[in-house]
Length: 614
Image 1 (cartoon, rainbow, N blue to C red):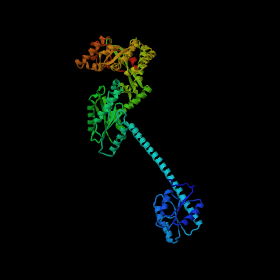
Image 2: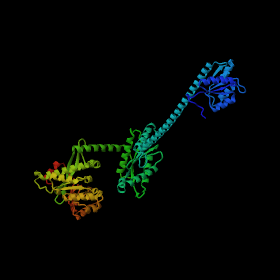
Image 3: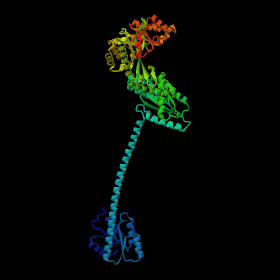
Image 4: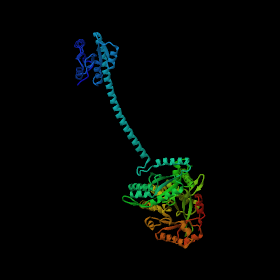
């Protein structure tokens, strides 16, 4: 049932009056004005008319039998469908009380009989216009409310979507932060997060005098061997297993982090003294000493641990970690698979080493090195047979620095390659000068020069080319050049090294095994590599006269060398008795302080000129 009409449709007016004449007159008047008019004599007819079609306006008489106009108006206003229809009372009652009552029950206007037609039309038009306006406002309000509801719904959906995006972004940020602060392999905190926690611990220690902590820095021993031999996947599996064992050695209040590679750091908080940290380190070493049963392999590995007490005087947390790292390296130097507690003196040593390294790099650039030469004596003739080139560093402030102080650093930093090539070139130039110098009046064509080579040189792709270039520039006979190598070179990569050594032999260069007897001393090396000479380490020469048992090694070494067609040089000869013993054992050559220490190049010529005999 359609109860609404548009603004341009004919307006419907319902007249309720029990007087037919009144109905006829009003109906005729309103019809002529273009209104649709319906009539009702009583309440029931009025109700039926409203149920059939809602009128736009009701003209209501008060004096109606059974149900008067006041009651009809009350009932219309009480009904939801008819409550908004304007009601104009038309009555012969002129009392103010009647008019007030009419407005109280819901009437919008009051026309007194007898009425003027023009008055009725004006009042009807006004009320219809008001109703039309109200309906339009209601419609606009409804449309506005619908638009508001729709917009609100859109905003709610947009807000919900935005909230979802915010939640997703927060989750992503949390995940990214977690990734940024944790190790992807083990899931442990990484260096960044560990340093943050360490900084918090340091700040707390500065504020609370009874709060103490310690830092442990751990590095696995020989982990690289596992990676290189079994592969990185097995290495990763081992790292995860190590992380689990370390975690099992700690309390829930301790922090464990992986720094990358095979390095781990531990923060122990709320401890009483350093003994607690030592107990944790001992527990870790014990757990790590047990075999790791991986998916396909059983692996043994251990670690070196540095311990640093959390002194509140540290300015930065990184310094705490640095000193724990220093203590760890000291543990490695002392034999690995152990712990070491940091001592402030260690930092001073490390600082001095760093300073020495920096000075060494500058020394390479400025060529601050010199070569001294120690004579090698033929035991049979007592004459000088050759010289060993020994490097010295002429430090601008520390004076003459011996190789034991800087060669290990040069090896570690890779500077040794440049230094070694320079020494070789200098020694060959010196040999050439000696052989061609007229002041000696002697034939020195058989004089040899011996140069120590670092194992690192053999890893250079152009090593042989460097040798060839030096020989070509100095024009010395390769047979007068002796290159001293150590057993460690032969162990590392025998196939590659063997090829290079045979290349050197083809060039007529002699090869000397230095410090024989102090390493593995495997006879297989002597058979497998083209060696010309064995050098007996000075420690064996020194012990010859101490007891017969120690002396027994020297004759054995000499016998082995001679049986394999090699000559023997004894180092560190300091007494005539030692020389006599070596001569009795048929040792070929000797060098040491008994004859001369290492001397400067300009003194070598003078020594040769004196033609000494021992």
